[in-house]
Image: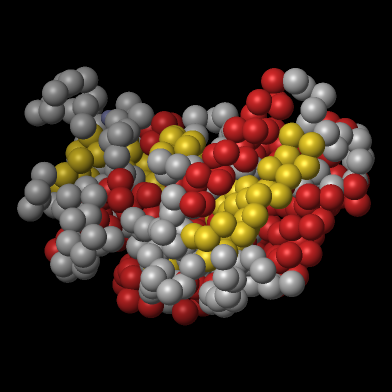
Length: 461
Ligand SMILES: [Zn+2]
């Protein structure tokens, strides 16, 4: 059979792609078993038969040899004659593609696997690990190199057999699957890398920004629908859950967590949900971020804060369809109940008072106007104390967690920029976390940095 060298650019290597009739990949397979286990001898013969038939059965493939080693337990690659002659054939330009059953069959340890897979890649020769569904020329190969490198470092620290062979057990269970479709903000390039889709990235950034300005996921979804902002499938069909999914997706800070699905069967490409059986792989700075890391972390802490707040006050939702900034934030100091307001009305009243379902609370209602007036006094008080509060805010900015740090720097900025409530009020959705009402008047206000002012403090000051 006449052999001819075909150079395949990395971005064209795809096991499903059809090659023109005159171009065939010269494909080699590498098989290896340990003869210590007798039943594997049968599997060895099977592997050879399988690859011969598999390669001959593919129109675009041309058999370039089945290379094999037996009973190599306890030796280095130096003694793997079959492996060595395959590498030599690759270096001589006689092979275009290498197929092998699995990572543990291909190499004896992590370092060898990394070394030879990289070497062949540098020659333009992909290695396909069937069991793991990895092609070293594709994104899955980049992932493999990343994982192998980190494992190799782990191994050099701990040379016990268990760790050395850790790679086997991990990969024998299947490989993590990278889902790069079905989420907003990124496209995939030809090599499978994530690249920022600038138009969609704007929507992602806006969602994080709105959320950290006090808009709840249901409210953000409502606004996006009203503005007809296209979602991931092009339609403006937003729901609270899709907004939350975006707020929680680690890809937006540039990281990649692979745990959701894995490839169970390479031949059928069957995916299975990872229910905790597989090791999770987390790669930091895997691709370009859309949201600053600090901001992303602040959004996670804000979600936790809201969860704790809802639990404390026994409410199901913050925010409302009417987009009221204080909905779910005003509470009764007598019974702990939530203050509610009828659409179009200006009176807030305890949900447990007369006229409502459980007529037990005697709390007086309070007008929206009164609330604003008292917030204005509280804000003036806060601004007057600014000089004393600045050192605390500065400390929070440098030592607090990302949310504390963000809120402290915003407090610094807003108390300086907007000394009058009428101006600060445009940020009230974010600024005010909780309002307690007693005797028809505001008793305490909690601002976003956690500072709590009692009404009347301003009068006494
Ligand atoms: Zn009440």
